[in-house]
Length: 535
Picture 1: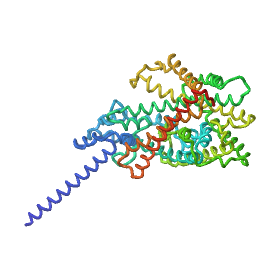
Picture 2 (picture 1 turned 120 degrees about the horizontal axis):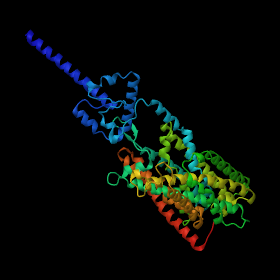
Picture 3 (picture 1 turned 180 degrees about the horizontal axis):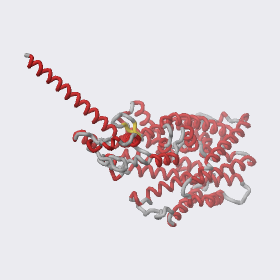
């Protein structure tokens, strides 16, 4: 009896010891897997290798932190790695872990801490205020000058559309950034995409992995080139109306402006231009204040009876494109959010920038229209008295000329990456030599792009119609249609019903506005070209 009790007692102790050993082994294996090391067993190794790439950055970051802490503690882990079956190379990286060596790449050496800090110093992160300033520059630019013309053909509905466009563009900007993230195996959000093109390509996989990127690139090129054309158009228009007594036509002024813009073809980077960005923005705000101050001085003559709840069915769709184009900023939002010190503040930044833009644009458009009513012109500064107009327009021309290099350089970069990049198997050879210098024929193509913007400005010198066409064609697509479509495609299973409703409603309304605005803008351009109508 005593022998039987002793045997059962020994069996229980043995089972308890075995259970404790298995649990501890599982915990250690799980911890090692979380840290990015290879699993201890074949089954765990297969499971770990089967993990998708969504958590790659997260796991790589954990691996780097562990290696840095090991280096600081004297490398004890490296000495005992032989028993664990994981070899560590000279650079401190686990040579047995193929997950971090795919395509011949891996994390940088752990000893390069100083160089890593140097890279951070070269590309410092921006604060939420600085990010908001960049967004404000994009949505409070020169194209605000065309908003009173939108009120002319839309009345109070035009004012409502300014508010509605601000709300929708703010929302689509947020959901576009949401498409950059996926949840890893731990349920943490990880940034797995960097650009608008990456999001588009992810939506078209696996059948057409690069189709979405091509569509977004085409839309970006059209919008950026059309923005350059608008700067040339508005420069010629402003100079012609500033000096109407001179025997120089608007087209001739556009040619003069283009001659001043030819050096843009030699740009290697935007360092020489960026220093003027703040000055240009301040000048633009000063100009807006001057225009509003003049309008307030004529408050007694405001034509409130001219603002009605009616729309010009033929021209109001053009106004929709103008308003939408004035809010376009989605192109650079992914890059902007990725460079913020605290990406969690992105939503708050988008809220206050678009609220401020909505208020300022609404007040500017309404006050300017009340002052000139039915005489409101496509560029509102053309309504100012000649004494004030010349000074204001000269400031605006300077701002337009200094703003031109930004979209021009961005368009050149997209074109070069899409068509002249040997590493990505593009259609044409690389336009840069082995020393990094631009080849002669590449410089000629850049000059041709500047001349192309001039030719378009000469043959289609209609600021509002071009702005409405661009807003309807690419603005609505990049700001309304694509973000809502991508949001539904990538995050469908995680969306609440009201998110789905908003996305579908924005896609439908944006599609209707884009089609109608494009058709009426084209009709207006054809009519203006046919009958020789000038601004």
